[in-house]
Length: 206
Image (cartoon, rainbow, N blue to C red; front, side, top):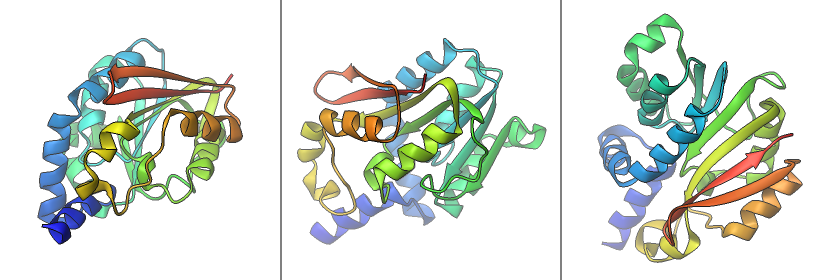
């Protein structure tokens, strides 16, 4: 069971093949409150360009499309997920409304001040260097932009160690605040989504 748990846990960071698609399917359902939180926040903003980091099977992008007129860009390390996300958002991809690529958030191929908002759900645990990734996001955000980062709490992840013991880097609220300040963000605001389970970290660039 240990090896199986480790394998499934590894799929969360780099979904691939049939197992990766199944894991994403279940995570889409488990993470509903996290998606809704981000969709609500983005829906309150006037955005022309949004970047989703770690788009997986494109579920969040699909949910964002009705609440914003922005062109939505996405970056993910998995070729398999790019195919899945493009299929989920096929018409929007064909029209140019959704533009997906494969790559690493620690080395973004976008110009400075490109996006009004950046979003991500449950990806920062897998970044090679969270401060470097946040510095890149800070760079591509416009002044006044926000990075909406939905994550599970350290307490919750500690309860699922059979899946998160390998491959996950688990952080607490103070870690996120310190990372954000070091990366150059003007403020870091943390809001509970489900108390003691998950929360939304808002990295604000003024």
